[in-house]
Image (cartoon, rainbow, N blue to C red; front, side):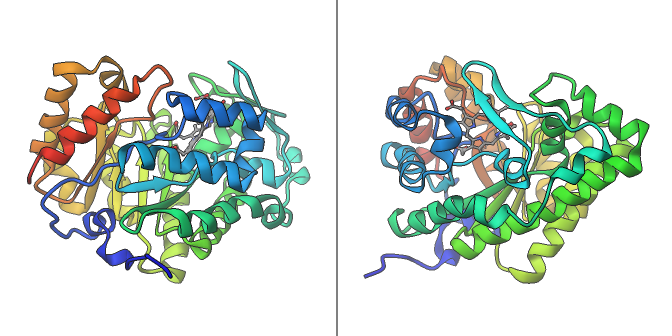
Length: 350
Ligand code: CP3
């Protein structure tokens, strides 16, 4: 017998639709990860990070771990934004202590090796994980699917690794914008297909991670960051009008207002640098906001963490709001601090 309750009755979805629920729903970016000893055990068993992403029973298990511990309002599929370039045919590896390594593509000729055709087969195990989660999650927990935004994914594809300044992708975008646009267009289509497949498999909300949105100047931000996300949201809305999309344009600052309004996302993720009061006045009138405790306050814990969490809750909690961090949990986070944060959020009646 299914214990599923209608998506429309779940706290996280109510918040995204602007309904009052009397408390803030909470989940945390990177809630599954190395800060949890039970994650490290499964990660070791899997051998490589990508094997973990592509093995449904293991990916399901690590997705459920933080739900068992903390009872978050939402569960985010365990996967990575870089499974998309991997599925398009670019070689991706995750090296211990080094992060992702890809065979860099920094010229339009490199696009010839990529194809949308092999995506469904390569990503089938990811969609199988979503189907499993749909059956195994507690009835009240919302299942979030995700993808990287085209610009953010492109920074890794072009740079061949993470970089502090995204210089390789920016230089291609500035030197040959129409060629770079071809990569962005391919990623836009790949992202629509990847998110649609997750929704078909049971994802109830999707989040678009735009980690490097803040690195582009306004004109290129509009062209390579905002416009592709707008197309993705429109394509999903045409097929799945009731599935909310959360955008996370990290570092976009004042441009996040245009991003929120023009992309028509239901929710906007705030990074650590956004003032809650500014967000209340400038962003919340447009929809639900999500964020934005500094992940390092969660490492520090104690009264500073509690005060910061309460400030966010008191400022944003009376409008449509989801509690989260301003970026992902870091590996040195003590699991007890997460439990304490969850109780602060749960005890705050709004
Ligand atoms: O719990 C969740 O949030 C779901 C799973 C998830 C992961 N990565 C797992 C992961 C999600 C949503 C992501 C998104 C992601 N991946 C982003 C966007 C958000 C952000 O953090 O800015 C980016 C830029 C990536 C690319 C990526 N993946 C990098 C740069 C790294 C290396 C850095 C690191 O933290 O190790 C990863 C690896 C990764 N993705 C890990 C996890 C749990 C750690 C790898 C391991 O366990 O060995």
